[in-house]
Length: 81
Image (cartoon, rainbow, N blue to C red; front, side, top):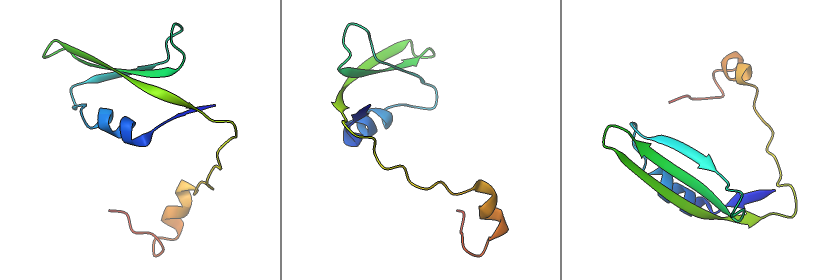
């Protein structure tokens, strides 16, 4: 089980544009980092970012998932914007 700092992940994701292709990998030669590569073929650019992984000892609490159909059966309870 591994995690990442959300602030660092957000910083990388907001750099990406709609024309970028994002590749997320963990390389065999460095298992302590998450590599995110952004490629833009129109501009001929490629950028790679490495985020340190967090070692999580326990499984985080998973929130109860809302059944998607319930959203439409009880429309007064939910407001979709």
